[in-house]
Length: 296
Ligand code: SAM
Image 1 (cartoon, rainbow, N blue to C red):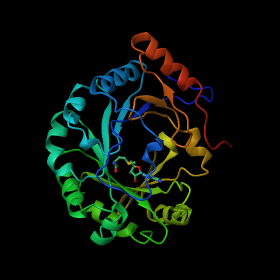
Image 2: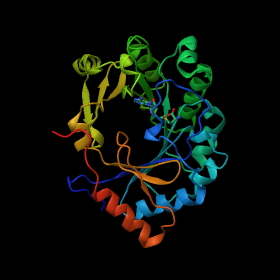
Image 3: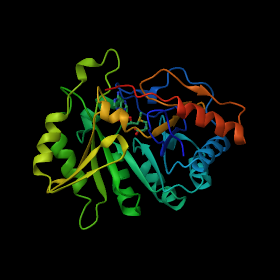
């Protein structure tokens, strides 16, 4: 079992398979990467994933950059070891094309980033994106069973804070007796220069908490999922949130193959040239030294 000195057990792994992206969202934190080196190879991704799996990690998330830009993404997914869940976070632009094959290769489900349904606003946020492609990608993912699809909506002050209801209604349109889609409302991590877009999502959460008929508290970050007559909605509030950090059970691997314990810290551990037991030792040691970013 991978455990740090704060008693936090690492159960989830998040691997950035590339830092390349086909969108240019102005707020992007780039998964905390500043000047990444050479892109990690498919074999290395699989080797690292296997080491984490053998050390007890249960869930794997593939991220980027945009993971679907990798030509070998299907090979990677297909050759990953068996996790309880393998998911991917994608901007959805190429998802319609890949959804079927991703499912066949063993992907469990997807998170799709979509901050607005308004085509012009989507283009403004992403510089180059076509929202219709993303919508078709979500539809296709629901159809082929990459579910539950989580629609990741980043809330920005003065941009889309009034669109939560509309996005929840869109998400809920895929649900009947089965939950196929969930809206995940994310608070902006305000990197320097973007503070003016920060919007505290607590009031929105309270609104949905009031009308919820059922709640599920997730182990990860103590996030609460609310089941409401309008759909299923979850909130991600990382900033100044000590409970979020105390219940962080995730490790990251950067697009150039380093271990990164925390998105908000400029700290990553090189594991180049390490294999087998030596690789596992480096993972155990890096996990042991993890520190919550916001402490109580
Ligand atoms: N390209 C993929 C995608 O769009 O999902 C994966 C990478 S993207 C960096 C992963 C997630 O990070 C997206 O859901 C995005 O909304 C979120 N994200 C990016 N910048 C952020 C920020 N400054 N604060 C909070 N979340 C952010």
